[in-house]
Length: 557
Image (cartoon, rainbow, N blue to C red; front, side, top):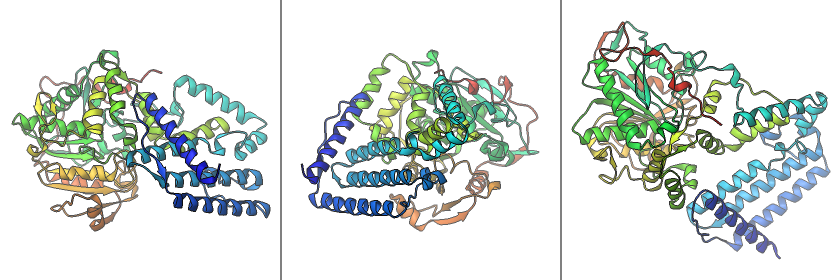
């Protein structure tokens, strides 16, 4: 078999593996067409031979140069065989990825092949195996085997808890050293608790402020520590602040639907905040899936002729699901049908399964890094509040999850006027005429910047779009006091359909986007009034201290 045939055979093997993966996921995938240009294959072969020859020559005259943080420890450089193994692995990975680029097939198939190869490459790194990891071997010798013993203990602990430890979870407790902003639960139903926070200013703006976080995570990503809490920041800016704390679904909520999340959570929370604040309108914010739910609530209310929200903020939110990034590799008709069948009679989408999926979107950072540290080196990961939150997974009701998959990721129905019915109303965002603040993170791999920007094309009212640096979480949680990163602003009257056109003309600013957003929100918050001295109002009285019971409910293994 010549080299062209060998590479073609390799490509066919990838495709068969991909088809098997889709079948396991519930799909009924057919093997798509795949071919390779002979010219591209020849060029790849020549490049590989040249680089392999150079690597061999380097190893004969010293040690090859390895530029990858997984192999940056001194032990890798001091061990010629380890350095050669690492360099050969990197060469093979580059070639495999180049081969995926050379594949001639449809865009989705290519993306799936690339994703599969990236997962293979991350898993097969020599750093992941004790027999090949020079650094872990050196530590075992230096500690006389203690690191191996500790690694086994860490492995058994993680097997028992059901997930890889990303931080020392024993050092955190919700309500004690995370989610500590002072407040009370002032309303609850079977789906959520509503938290009201104690004012930090003598006066507050007359329009209360409601935050709806994503239902696939706990709300306290917005309230990790006092110094990086968006909730505390909003309170300190003079807003009477309320937050939805989603219940972590158990079997009693196995038949919950998308309509329930919109009607019984978002719309209900808006109504309760209106009553407590004794005001016709409030301001609202939705983060990630919370923003998608808020957008649906606003459309339902508009269809009913109601306008209780004066302004809306959408943080890293998808409403138009044209650009969904890497998550698109999982979605097709077969996969969605599988999930619909799985949850036809109710059920739960386990939080730990979703958490694993999101972790493998960044396998080197969120999976193998901890496998190496925890198990091969016997280390305890350092305390990190964000990673503690990331490990505190939540379930989703199966029917709600299946509806969401079909109507958003698969069919993108929300932006088609009148196509989707939610809570008995046809969704038409052209009727949702209110000022909106839209934020997207430049390096977001969950809500790509193009997907976040697409919301500028959805609503008819006045809009402000801001792009922040970093990713889905770090870009959002960027307090001004830290004086980190930067953000970009542009025209508030012209929003071309292509995000890159807006980015090309945007102006960069140092620091946090929070200050820009705060100025915008205050302009829609009304006059200032004396801060209330008690929580709630009328029938809505303090039930318990924030952060409440619901956020402390953990998923089972």
